Image 1: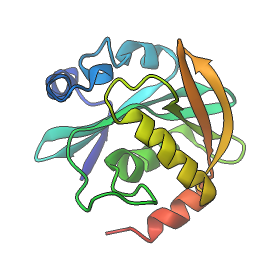
Image 2 (image 1 turned 60 degrees about the horizontal axis):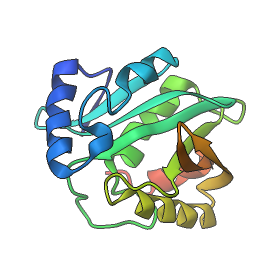
Image 3 (image 1 turned 180 degrees about the vertical axis):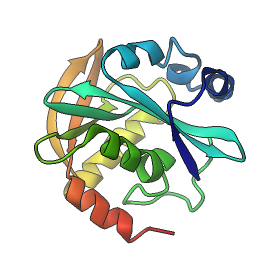
Image 4 (image 1 turned 90 degrees about the horizontal axis):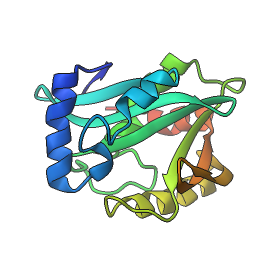
Length: 174
C-alpha cells in the first residue's frame, strides 16, 4: 500500500466517482468531502493507492486542543482478511492514520481525535464504525471523549491512545 499526502485533484475526482457508485455520498466529490474546508482549517488529505488508484482517503484538521484524524475517511477496496476486532483491516486505520499522526505531531500534549456518526448513516456503514469504536475503547485503544453536534451531525468524539494504537499496530505489521 502506498500512502500519499495531498493527492492530486484529478485522482481525487476519479475516486469520487467510485465513491458515488458505491453510495458513499460524503465522498462523492470535492464539495461533499469538504476538501477545501479541511484545507482552510489547517488540514491536509491523504490517500492510499493500490495499482495507481486511490482505494482509501481521509483528511486531518485542527480540532479542540489537537487534531481530528480520519476526517471523511472512506475505503473502496474490501478488507483483505475480513473484520478485525482491532480494526487493522481498515486501510485508513492501519496505513493513513500513522501518516496523519506524524504530520500533526500528535502526542499527549497534541491529542488525536476521531469522530464517528451516532445517528446519520450516509453510507450504511457509519453506525457500524461507531459500534466498533466502543469495542476499541474496551481495549484501551481509544477513550470516549464526548458526544457533540459537529457541523449539524451528532458525533461520538474519541481520543486516540497513541501508544496503545502503535503497540496494537506493531503486532499486525506485514
